[in-house]
Image (cartoon, rainbow, N blue to C red):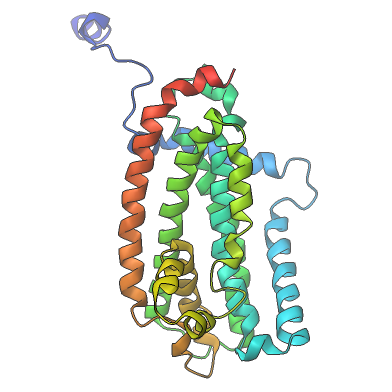
Length: 298
C-alpha cells in the first residue's frame, strides 16, 4: 500500500507539458465543468440586480412579436400579401438575433475576460464557445414564443420534415457563428477597432436575408443568376429559409413554393459543410495568434 502511494506521488514519472497546451475546441468541450461555470456566470451577470430576471427573456421577444404583428400584419396590410407575415418575420428574427448576439459577444469575449485569460492556464476557446452557449440559452424563450404564435394562428400542417429543416438551420447558425466568434475574438485583441467593424456589419444582417421580405422578391428581381448566387452564399440567408420552412410555412393555407429554392435541403447541407471547414480554419487562425493575446491584453 505504501509503495503504491509512493509511486502515485513520484512526480518524476509524470511527463512535463506546457500548461497552455490545448487541442482547441475539443479541449474546451473536455473542460465541461469550466464551460458550465462560465456560462452560468455570464447568465447571472446579465440578470444581476434585476427584478424580473429570466422573465425578460420572454418579455422582450413577446413585445417584439406583437410589434411585428401590428406593423406588418395590420398597418402595412398583411405583409405584402404573404399569409402570417409576422411569423415569417419573427422566425427569421430568432435566428438572426442568435447569430448577431453570438458573433458580437464572441468577438469581445477575450477582452471581457482578460483577467481570467491572463491569470489562468485554460483553453482560450472556452470564452467564445461560452458566448455561443449563452446566446443559445437566450434563444430558447424566443422559440417558445414562436411556437405559441404558430399554435395561435393555426398550425395547420406541421411535419417532421419542417422540424428537421428548422433544426438544420439552427445547427448551421451555431457552427457559422462559433467560427466567426472564435476568429474575431483574437482579431479584436490585435486591433481594438475590430469590434466596432463587426457591429457595423451585424447591423446589415437583417436586411441581407429573406426575413423582412419574402425570398420570392429576390428571384423576381434578380432571377437565379450571379446576384442570386451571391445572396444565397450567405449561410444566414439559408438558415432563415430553413427555419421558415419549419415554422411559418406550416401555418399557411397556401403552398408558398415560390418562397423557397427548389434545392433548399441540398444547399443547407452544402452550406453546413462549408461552415465546418470555416470552423476548422478559424481554429487554426486562433491557435496561430492566441500566443500574443495575454501580452496585448495588458
